[in-house]
Amino acid sequence: ELKSSHFTALAVAHDSVIYAGTNTADLISLDLNSTRVLSARSFSNRTITEITDIAIAQGRIWAGSNGGLISADLALNEHAHFDTSNSGLSHDFINTVMETDSVLLIGTVSGVDQLNPTSIVAFNERNSQIHNDVSSFSLDNQGNLWVGTYNGLFKLDKGASKHQDAKVLGITLPEERV
Image (cartoon, rainbow, N blue to C red; front, side, top):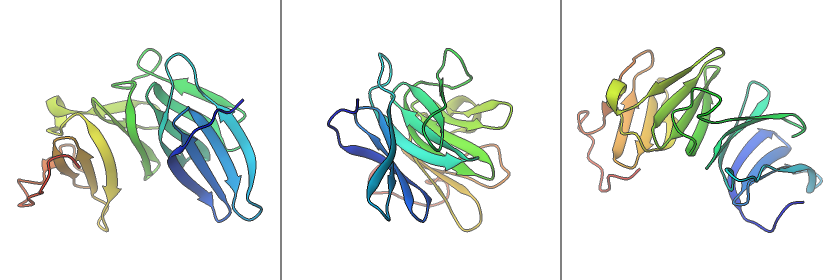
């Protein structure tokens, strides 16, 4: 049973279906043409209490949460839960998720995890100069990844393995938290 809640994440699957995540760890698919709920599932348990972001990639829904990563089919029937105990995730608290070039990017409080078809690679302060607490992602027109953190903005040039602090690029922000 779904609880009373508010939306915390949205992702458009195609022209008429949108997925919503809630502050009570529910995932809901909505048909925008008929305005009806197609499917809904609660993922609330002792470790997951909120959906923080959603991406649709590789024909699946990937939902970040405060207790790990949820992967579900588009009908919300079959699902898997990944956390630090059963995967290579760097942290269970996931702030943001995004798909690019068939790779799922996962922004956690311990850096950026890159989910490849066979592995998870972590980028953090130790190995790529990025601040660990990642809050957002965006791609520019050249395919470079911009990463917002609680300690500034970072850029990862397409094909590079180390992030650059935006300050080094001459970009000054009025606020460190992006």
